[in-house]
Length: 280
Image (cartoon, rainbow, N blue to C red; front, side, top):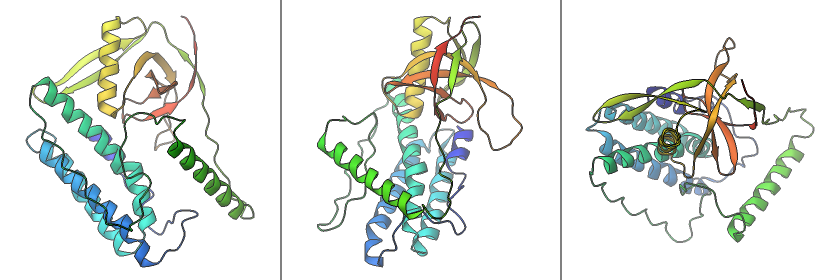
């Protein structure tokens, strides 16, 4: 959990003078909805801390709340609201989703009723809605008109930004899906966290029983706030880290939302891949 806290709130890309490419300069009146959204997320973080404060991780969740509050004050005070929204989308929303799912699972296992979530604050009439405000676990239905409209708007935005930077010789990164081989004989160790019993050591591999694979899939689903996760096997891969010198490591491969992913057990990051099965 400590590693995940550090990775989510390392503050990379939100300090200094960085600006979001393509973000328009807006009058201050247009900044208000973003600041209100940031305040709402701070409230949700504080409520999450209240649920964790009697657990061994209460102070860590409190530290995340306090650090996020400082980021809010710094960026909002300088009208850098687009960077503030990007920070929340990349970090805060994922943190809230993940750790809300964890505490809910623990409370269900110990038959402790979870407190009812407070109703979301009502947005005054005339205030623009911010895309990304609502946390939704699982994929959207692709045939819904709202999904099609959002996708079309994002494509138009992407095309406009591409035209804007066409003469700047900016290198646009290409996202790749490397092909991996499923290891059919080696097992790796993972830890399941229990508020009352601490950490439990478990093994998982291609030859594990269906019950063991389902237990692992349930653990990952709860940890990441996902649904319909299945375990595929393990694979040996190089995972990009903050240091240049690193060795290949064996990591689990899961299937979610119609696609395979490798999962870093160090910080619970997902990387999309393509798979083929390779025997010993």
